[in-house]
Amino acid sequence: ARLEIFVCRANYNTHMSMLAAAIARGGAAQRLQCRTPAMQWGARRCLGDSVAGPPMTDLQANAKLALSFFTKSPMSYGECKQQCVSLRIFVFAAVNIGICVALFLDPPKSSYWQRMSPAFYYSHLKSLLIGGGSPPVFLTEKREGENVPSIVTQLTTLRRLESAGSDSEDE
Image (cartoon, rainbow, N blue to C red; front, side):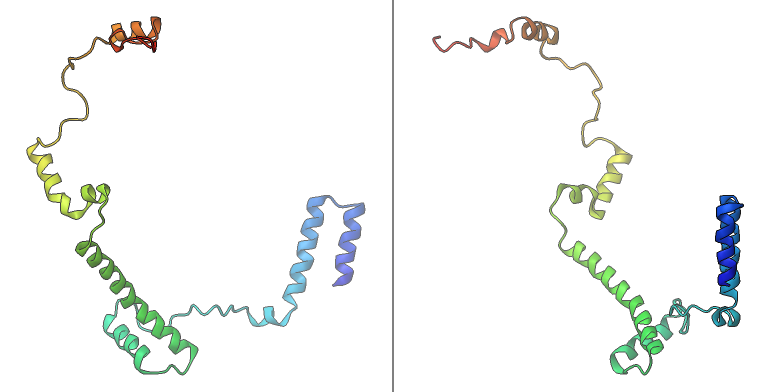
């Protein structure tokens, strides 16, 4: 095996292109890996993610295993893992229900929550269907007020408004 790799390196330097040398080195490495005992027996990665217990949809069986977490000491890693997996389903549900109840009983005081909370949905739906309530975002008619062109002329020529008075301190 060492001779093959050495020959490939020697050929790379003298006769082979870079692509051919890479292919030759890869083939030598594969031949070496196929000769190892682990590859002959078949590779198995023991990652601990095999399924042993009831499916997540079987709540009754999972409840039994989750209760055994508190009453029975596990005898193996697999049993302990299954107890934790079964308990996780109910802990997740309990935490989410607890958060929702806490938000319902003591909601935040922010203006965002006042407008977007579930309690506002009824009044928002009512204003959409019936109308009215708040004024529209864009103006519907011309607004009467100051003469804007004369204000711009005063600010650009005099650098102040005539109605504002004088800037001098002696007056």
